Image 1: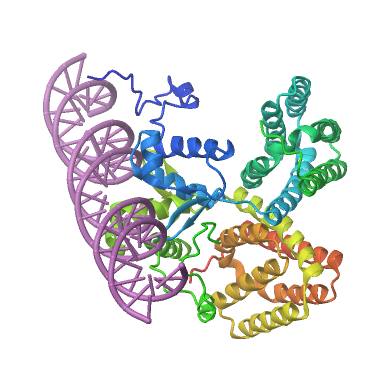
Image 2: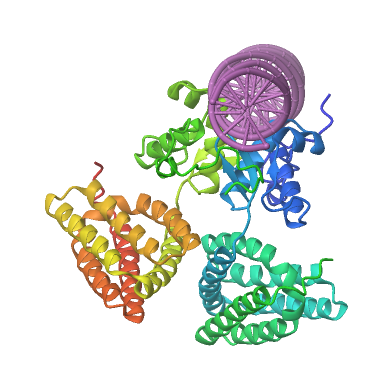
Length: 241
Length: 241
DNA sequence: GCTCCAAATATTGCATACAGTATACGGACA
DNA sequence: TGTCCGTATACTGTATGCAATATTTGGAGC
């Protein structure tokens, strides 16, 4: 029977408000699989270079091979796995060179993003930024790496959103997630300076000073890049948690 | 690189030359389907907003639904179609706003790309650029729009390649293809100025003047953006080819 | 003992089949 | 006559089956 109160073609006017509320969608399975696999990759549960066998993953996740295949292909286009023809999927192994290139691109995109944000920011936007800034500083106190990394990502995403350029936001999202993967292991030592720079950035955006915001962000990104490089050079104190 | 310790019958030396020659790969069908569909979209054979039915496409291309599905999903991540859950694929309808955002991002990426190219260009790189420049000018004479657009894309791709940043190249490739889609209809009036600017760019790169190369490219990209905007404003001479 | 070859196994790629959901059509009721 | 509801149809999402190809293992020849 009709157990769901489906207001299918409603929009009769009286229900116009309902249009804003997203109806519960049947959540595509491939999306869930994508998220799950991505989590496993970022967790290092699936190690770089590892061969991913569709059937194994399917059984592990309790689904058929089909959604797994589709998820793997999207993971490829997003740079998380390499899909070699007739051979299967392998977790992408990031080279130092590639990481540097990614950080360089990120620097350029984020710099532009900061400029845009400074030009478009409304008072309520600034409010959000300050809130995220506080959340980050709190995470800094608790020294919870995972929370710190997330707070960082949130702030950058918010800045991108304020820029009102969706294409740019989407790209930054992609790049940042990959950067985050490389960067997580070294997030701790950098975090303190990082949030000072964030504070500067938020101020510049609040002032509507595009030039300065861009400059601050550029410095911020380049500093991250440098930190990454340094930590790679003296890699011996690699403590896994 | 095979990380497996068993170097089975690996490159005995006498066959080392064969390594350079790509063995005839069983050409993944989904790739062919992707290319075919993309061509149809760029051709406007599949109109923006059109509902793409998997079964129809499959029959038309003489394959099953499976490779079609996979191609459609990649087309989504690349921004060519919108995949609405339980509803199917629709050819993406580009809004003016989105086009402008895309051109803005392109401008930023290309500017950086030009700087990198100026820093890394070798004499042989410059040779290639000049060759492409000549090819473009020849296409300009023949007034073949399709060839012009391709020559343009080739030059930009070459500049990106010289920059030695693969991540950047890949991104520029994606963005440029979409820009090209929006831009093709108005390619003709702009082409003359465009190739003059290209010449300037090539010179700057040949001189290794990163600052100037970046500036020229920035101007070039912004000019394109402006032209796009103008042509949208006075849109009445829309001649279909 | 080492190399080369061949059968066996494993895994991908593609095709088909089935189930769930959204849209479209047609009839009943006010 | 207009609106609402129920059924029918179409399409997507997922699962399974089959063929082609790559990898591994075992054995024969030098």
